[in-house]
Length: 197
Ligand code: SF4
Ligand code: SF4
Image 1 (cartoon, rainbow, N blue to C red):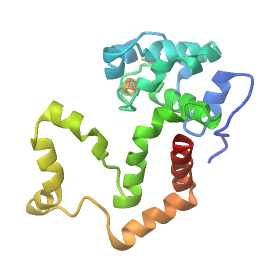
Image 2: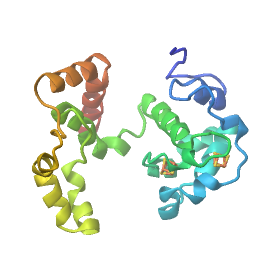
Image 3: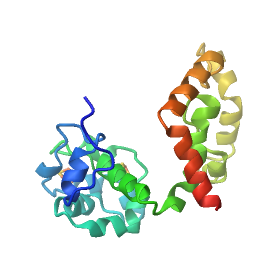
């Protein structure tokens, strides 16, 4: 049952987060112990000043200043934080809700521009695919074999007896239709226009 308002705009940041449809009913944001396990396992915290424990605390304290913290954009939604939280909280989802609230206010659109190609990959292939803009960095990390894997992926899958990774034909059209009717496609276009204007 979707009973929640994604735009949630009450006086309480905590209630806005809890009322968002992304927040599952048992999500334990109010039970957060401030144990810091999420931060200790967070790759973004390891490589930046982002601190999911502190983010959750500020939401619990109804402190809107967290919305102005540029570090929250360093989370890349790996979901590690929620997998070991003793309170069944998900800093990852809390972060998603915060960022959505900021974007709905028309702010920080530039923060997600480089990820739009990821969204467009659903329209082109029916699945999420790492955008080519990231290839140079991935080659730097994994070597040329990363590109070779990308180029030969379908052949490798066929050799292993697996079906195509990318969707085609009717299945692809079905995904595109869902993305269009859900507003996903128009949101992508909107963000693209905002950035280019
Ligand atoms: S792991 Fe869970 S309980 Fe511990 S600080 Fe993070 S959100 Fe709070
Ligand atoms: S989802 Fe975000 S906050 Fe959670 S562990 Fe991954 S990078 Fe850190």
